[in-house]
Image (cartoon, rainbow, N blue to C red; front, side):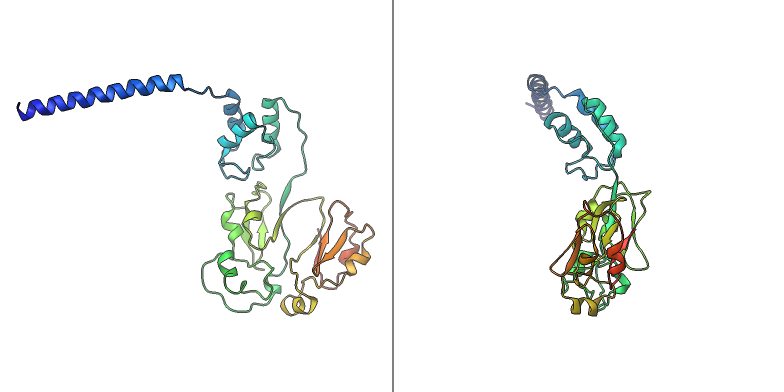
Length: 265
């Protein structure tokens, strides 16, 4: 048998095997085919296609599948807003009502108001800074200002401003919450416009230590607690917290705060 004949026979055998495998795969695909629910594709079509994961799923297609097949909440896509919720509700036959939109709010006004303990030179990342003795700032609870929230935002809605604090462009923000999850110090929170009063501090240090580190930090004096007519404020571990459901936005606490920590917006 010549070499050419051997090559031809080998090619024929391989071709035959390939054809056989192909036929078997086609048959298997028909036998084991799972019919896709057409509603899934309809839901995908009304989603923004950002695939940002803010819904808690792998992407828009996965979210759509969970909505249709596993009864995931139809308002789980913050990026699509009420328009997407309304469209999905129409597809799924569910009534929907529009809720107030929430945007990231920075619960820290330290920045340049807070002393630096050392000059940091390294990776521009808040997590990296926090690895060095709980950060460069005099307050280890505050905003590090190194832009982790900025870089995680897929919509370029955040910047670090001249005060070394995150600043939001609400026209670009989709309220996805990725920046909230990325902040190592829990500085950012999603807040609605009706939530008017906020404590701009996250420190649990005692008053003396707070004053030494930051000119506007909460010292846990409880003057705001006494001033609030709605009993909406509590102080836990030297930090004032506001119950937004009780708060009426009267501003009495803002006037009483000796540190200027509480903001009425």
